[in-house]
Length: 251
Image (cartoon, rainbow, N blue to C red; front, side):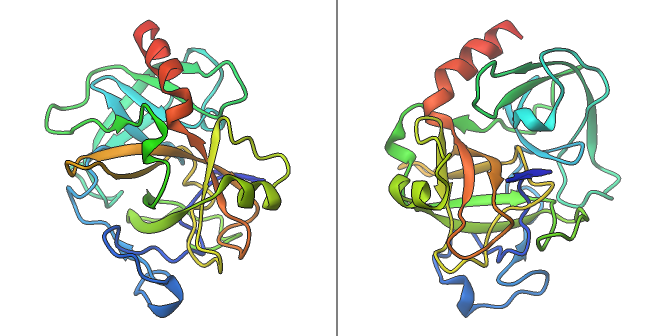
């Protein structure tokens, strides 16, 4: 789900475009969704399906997701994480159950889920941003969520798109309750590209100067999906990186 003002975020109604392309989504058409494309196997190997939400492999035995996707802190053994595939019907999917959850304990919408067993060594982790130098430019988003607002139907295939950074003042104008100290916004001004229901918890990421992927955000909420002037709101990972690291060490 995504908190639509809508908790959750799915690449819904959105124009999912190839991460390397900085085109205007209104200028392209996609086979699956407007401007959208399917991710290829191995393209984003650290992306995790978290029982109807998204997530990213933070360490060999911990997944980073959104707090509103999971129960409160404590023992939890009924969350199934799916790794290593873009097609949710792929028989090669690796499925591992949770053992416990640790929420942020604050208003920040992030949580860590511990796996019953470590993820396979073949699946890399996704590094998180530890300073705000990555909070700019073009970001990438992925998810199995709705392909349009109100669809209420998860997708079989992982979809990908790119969305640009939205200045804090612009986001504050769209959402008076936006918290720039712990949240970051991204969207095309004219809409058309976004995450939506069932994309919540998934990573928003970009390359660093060396070409490595860095997680900048966590899909959190938004008003509807892909509406003009209503950007997607993400947890600002750089602002909570230290808390995430401390929580992971105790999980």
